[in-house]
Structures are given as C-alpha cells and as structure tokens.
Length: 388
Image 1: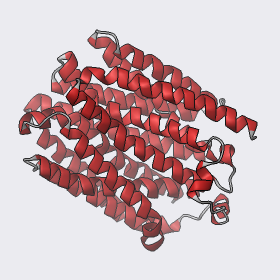
Image 2 (image 1 turned 135 degrees about the vertical axis):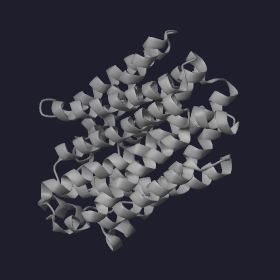
Image 3 (image 1 turned 120 degrees about the horizontal axis):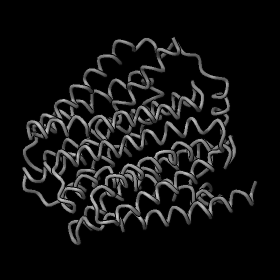
Image 4 (image 1 turned 180 degrees about the vertical axis):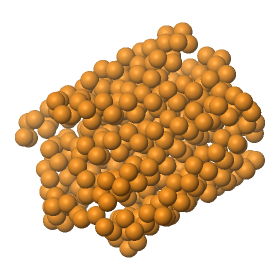
C-alpha cells in the first residue's frame, strides 16, 4: 500500500512539472501570434509566482483542515483548468487572468507533496520525487515541439497538457483513500516539538542569509533558462520555434538526470561535495553559451540543467545538519521563500533587460548569478564550519 501511494505521489509530481516549462517554451509562438512585446512574458510569470507564494503561505492551514489528498486533487484540477483556459486566450489580459490559478495550484501541491514525503518516506525518495518533477518539465516542451512542428499551433499544445493533467486528476480521485492509510514515521514526531523562532532571529543566524542566497541564485538560473532559453535561441540564434522547444526539453532532461545522479551519488558523497560538482558543471554550461556556435549553446543548456539540478534537493537535505533538527523546519520555510523569490524575480528582470537591451544578454545575466552563488557558497561553508 505504501509503495502504491508513493507511485501516485511521483505521478502527481509529474503534474507539477508539466505547466512549469510550458509557458517559456510556447512564449515565442504566443507573442508572435498576439503581437506582444517580448518582455510581457515576465508579467505572466510574475503573476504565476505570486500565486505560488500565496498558496504556499496558506498551505499549512489548508493541509491541516483538508488533508494532503484533497489538496493535491484540488490543486491538480486548478492547474488543468488554467492550462485549458490558456489555450483559448486571445489577448494579454486573459493570459494574466489564467496565470493566477496556475500559480495557486502549483504552490499548494508543491508544499503538500514535499511535506508528505518528508514525513512518511526517506530522503532517497525525496530525491527521486524531484526526478519525476523533471519528467513533467521535460515532457511538455517535447509535446509542444512536436505539435508546433506538425501543426504550428501552440494552443493545441496547451490543450494536450491540460488533458494530461485531467488524466492525473482522475487517478488522484480514484486513489484518494490511500492517503490516510500510511503511518507517520517516527522522525516526524520531532517536527511537533520544533523550536519556534521569529524571522528576524533566523536571518541573523550564521549561514542562513548565505544559504538563502544560494537558493535564490540556483532557482533564478533554473527558471530564467526555462522561461527564456527558447526565446534566446529563436531571437539570437535564428533557430526555428519547434527546434528551440526541443532544446528546452533537453535542458529539463539535464535537470532530471542531474537529480537522478545526485540520488545515486548520495550513497558515497556528502551533499556539499555533490553541490560543488554540480556548480562546476553549471559553470561550464554557462561558458558554452558565450560561444557563437549553435551546437555549443544546445550543449550549454543541457549542462546548465545537469549541473544545477542537484543543488535544490541537496541544499534542502543539508538543512538539519547545517542548523540543527530542532529548527530545521523554521529555516526550511525561509529557504522556500527565498527560492520563490528567485523564481519570481530573476526571469522577470531578464525579460525587461531582454526587451531593452536584447536577449543576447542571457549568458551575462546567468554568469552574474553564478558568481554570486559561488561567493555565497564560500561564506556559508565558512560560517557553518566555524559554528559546528
């Protein structure tokens, strides 16, 4: 029964990934059809992120009242309906309206599933959970590229993604009774006795600000590439939209493989070592984007995904070790808020800069984030080691 529920959770996390890569992949086709400025995509992604932040802040109350199973069903339904409405949008304002329920649904199911797996399953399952997220974000660009290549219609791609979400919704409804049949692990008891600290107290702790900065930069790089990779290749490298969508798929495959390999390496290597290895690969991928060749850009985006993929799960795994089990849940909340901040602001800022200066700026934008990440990593290790 526990294994079956875990499989359902993995499938549900696929549904979380499907919408995340769809908009950035489809945006070149959307702004061309609706004759919109390139930077307008940033407004849509900001609204999605705001919805995600709102639902994440309300998630603890909603989970306590309705339970994980119901929240997952409701959130999946919300994202499925939002994707369907996206496909019928014929102006910028309707895109913005559809963005809010998409963000609300994504944030709720993200917090719900991460919390449930943390309470009921081991860390290795959490690692592979994020791999299934990678399956979702890799599948939707592939589907969209095939549809645009054969029919030239991004709307059918959104309708196809919505159909997949509705299928997952039916599966969740059919298995709703499984959620209450899994026993809570003994380790969750410590969560009930976790220390309650104020936000000001936590941010003053050595290493907290630096770790949060690593979350901001890692998630900023991840979502900026996801949202603007396609536009960069279309506008700067003259790549056809359908082919650019396939590169986005390759980028997310790299992200998924990075997290899968991270789970395998965790048996032998410490999480800090895995993070360092990931940063080396990430830096190499960004450098390849500076080269004028199309092939090196394609390889670069894959390496960026592969190197950056392990950072988010490993930084989360390190939280109890870095700050102690009794306050790890408090710090985890700040870290998630920091990651959402990077997700919301980084792609939006680049969208504005891309409109004013040009999308060729993407490698410079990413390398700035990368150097801030490395500096934060160094300071965090120094603070944490001196207080251990």
